[in-house]
Image: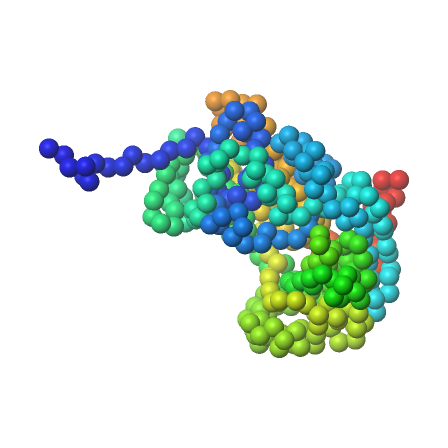
Length: 393
């Protein structure tokens, strides 16, 4: 007689698995759901609120907005737009305004939306149980005929017919198709916030303005966003070595000491800009900026593909990362829907468009980073925006 505890538990199997519950993976799952195709999304975060998702996103008409239309969420997205968020100021280190654009009503081509609000919108559009929270993927291996076995952090495994890596810069799925790894871009950020800025930090609120701020020099600069509720989200950007976070000697656990050290990099800058550091509320968070090689691509590998940062990680200086991830998700879903029962054809069609799209945006991002920190900055960035305006006139 067989005892119950000797009976093996059948291994879970999913026809389609998405690793990563970011914007790109959620768009993919949503569009497929609209066409009656369900997915299993594995996300390492324990819950939707386990960590902040980041600041504001400008959503482009030809990528993210197209994806949200395909997801049937365009009206809901428009309701979440931050009016005035497309305003932009470019300053030099002396806080002289070198270029300024206003945004009266948020009806331009790149409206600003909170990443948290956008993710909540996408999560709310999926059937309950689509997301497996607290499920960290640690490994994946091919089983043949396009099928893969995926291992989670708790040691459990499952199999899938189609494995999609939407798991970001340090993708666990990417090694199945590519040996490429992200390289250091030459720039690091220190991230910080000023809360209730209009009341508590009116000088900083004035210098940032209503939307996006660039204050640049060739070796350092400030990038800032005004967010809902009067919060200012600040990035100090520095051209420093790849190991700067550990080799600089700055103790980022001691916020006041870290502020004092960081201010040394901004000697000679206008005090209104230095105050973005001095008056910051809460911790200072260092981040190194990495990118995959421009033109990253791979040979068609049965039963697996990538989207978003897993496929074409780039610096944020072209504002394309989240936009492309969402568009990738919508395009992959469209290919799957268009080729029922032929996964390889769907993936071939998707990747043939993905590779040149990602290469063009990655090249633009790298070029924009160089412009922002070139000799004579911020003039190069000003000239670039002038060129864009002349082309669109």
